Figure (cartoon, rainbow, N blue to C red):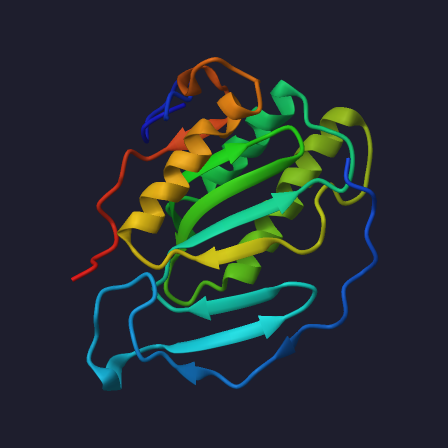
Amino acid sequence: MTHGCSGKNTSSGAAKQPRPPKERQTQPTRSASPVGQAFLPADQQPDLAITLRRLPHWRLDGSIYFITFRLRQGALSSLERRLVLLHVRAGHPQFYHLIAAVIMPDHAHVILKPHPGMALARIMKGMKGASSRLVNRGRGTKGSLWLDESWDRIVRNQKELLDKIDYMLHNPVKAGLVKFADEYEALYWSGETDIIDDD
């Protein structure tokens, strides 16, 4: 796992599912308190938008997201996991600020903060689409690699951020893939911990 540098990463089959119904969007609601952000005056609070497909999706400008996406079926090889991680890291800093990422054999976790004006849906479409092409090229196959919908959550405070980072760093160890987190080849952490202002 790496701490924002090159080299070895040193930071600490689901069945095909039916296509989800068309996304429904509610009216944006005014956030009364900060969600994964510093406090702002009431008239400067960004709008919180909630959409629903098979899973609920909350969107709030300036927020940090913990995201999970899963393979449609099968598992990624060690080389394929490294390829996916390289692609995830390639989006930083152009499209988002990447805090951490771990690519497991059948799913991936990412913590990131989209840049202003960059929709999370667009980021995930690019991340999953390009990584699918990379893996398919190596396999000599075609088609979507990942399930269409991702699970995402706004990280609400500093404690939650630290909990999510800790969970990701230990995910490969708990899965029995390695004995120590820094042995896992598809794990990245920027080394950042003090990102959300809880004051």
